[in-house]
Amino acid sequence: MASTGGETVYLTLRARILSGELPANATLREQALAEELGVSRTPVREALRRLDETGLVTFVPNRGATVVAWSLEQVRETYFVRAGLEGRAAGLAAGKITEAETDRLAELIEEMEPLLTAVEDSGLARLGALNAEFHRIVVSAARSPQLLTLTASVGRVPLMAGTFRRQGEQFRLRSNHQHRDILTALRSGDEVWAEVAMRSHILAARNAVTNAA
Image 1 (cartoon, helix red, strand yellow):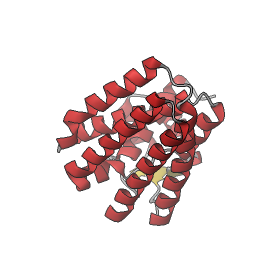
Image 2 (image 1 turned 120 degrees about the horizontal axis):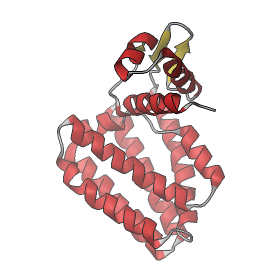
Image 3 (image 1 turned 30 degrees about the horizontal axis):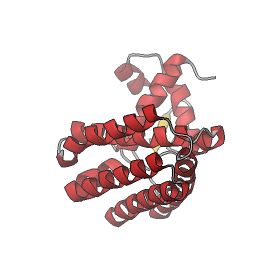
Image 4 (image 1 turned 135 degrees about the vertical axis):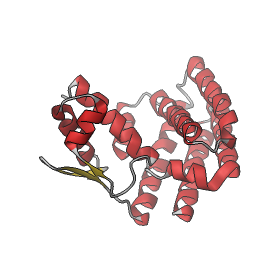
């Protein structure tokens, strides 16, 4: 089991990679990361091993790691898998989601709204975090441990932050409008509608990411 320190370092580095802050082919050195994060090299090494297992870095013991460069085909395939898994999760969630969960989804949509015109990195990072929480809640509401595990293993493509930046306001507006559609479907209890809405949302993101790559 991962230590508390290792878990914190892992989550920090994972978030940096997925946001694009640590780009493809960036070198991650144990000693430098340990000094930056104020920890020993042991939790850093533990985190880099886990990132290697999830396919985000290539880890070499005693040397560090390199952020993996995703091919366009790998990006497309990841989105196809996510669309299938999260679409199914949304369908299941339509019959099980609680009012508290749908209320939180509505809050997230409203919190994302003023960030749709953001240009600074902090705003885009916040938008990405809110978007990720929206998707986590929907998957959790499916009440399926298997789907939770599978969606976590697939992860998120480390290109979305760059796409938010390059595609601009219109892309973000469409994305949040699709969030509203998903929420309406979930509140209606319509499993087919919810599944199709989520699947369409993720495939639209795939098109935006791969067209911009």
